[in-house]
Amino acid sequence: MPTNTLTVTELMRGFSDYVKRVIYRRERFTLLKGGRPVAELRPLPAGRLLGELEDLLRSLPALSAAEAADLAADVEAARAELAPAGPGDPWQS
Image (tube, rainbow, N blue to C red; front, side):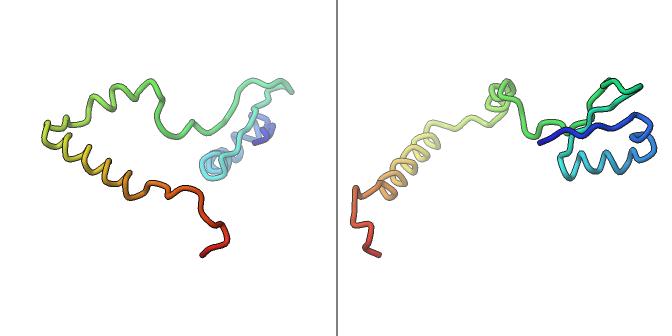
C-alpha cells in the first residue's frame, strides 16, 4: 500500500481523522517537518508473533491419554472419509 506524505501541522489539525484512516483504511503516512521525513503513522501488524507460539501452546490444557487417543481416531476417520478417490472424469457431475 502506498504511503502518503503529511506535514506535522496537517496531522495536528486533523489528528482524529488521520488516526481513523489508519485504523479503518489501513493507510500509512510519512510525517514531514520542515519538508523532511521525521516519522511514520501506520497500522500495527494484526495477529500474534510467531515467537509467541510456544507460550501459547504451553498455555493450552493438556489432553489425557484417552482424549489424545480419541482425537487421533477422529483425525484418522476424517482423513479416510475425505481421502481423494484418485483421478476421475472431469466432465462427470
